Image 1: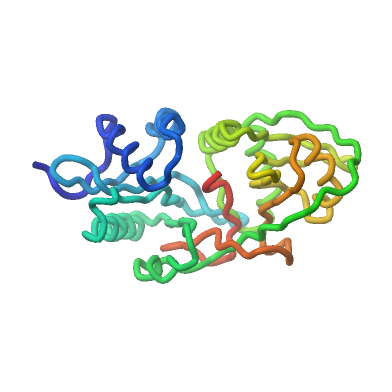
Image 2: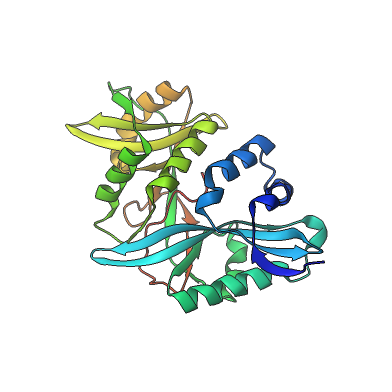
Length: 275
């Protein structure tokens, strides 16, 4: 029976769902939705034991942009091993394989560590800590009048590029933004354009445990404080939390947003990884 590393095929999706569910505990219909919407656009290296995938990671296309400079990049996402097959070195084999591929083909690899304690583990494969986000908590303030409207994924991506391109940032293809918007909507969220002081801003947010969690926005911290009451009223929450670029926000909890292999360390703004 087949044993070793290969790329997953469509026939492997049930096994991939089993690994995902055992590692991340997401609803099964959500996992199936992920593969239905994304499988044709991603690569899934797997370690196969007796013909069946037991360890996996997903490679999603992106690029690192810094002015006129651009480097192809791939996000390592949803890496996991069946509980009964852990401590056998399968994930190490997969990471060694994809980092060798990145060095050979010239693309950057990046990922968001699930926990800060994993930084040393990823360092052993050549990853270095790069950027952080700031998670700020804002009590609802005054309810100033707001005009909001839905944003399509492609509109959101154009606005995102305009907002973040003055600094190093990870750019996503439109198909990834389409998944992000669908993913956010699955969990009861909205992707919106918001008018404030004669300018149009964007945000992606969803209610979570009684708070409104803003995954991404180009609103500054002072602007968020001004609109926090109106946004909480719109989503029916009693609190607002937001992930903001650490270079633009000096407050809040520091969250490591990326470790990078074979790419520049420029405090590259990285978001829309796990929504």
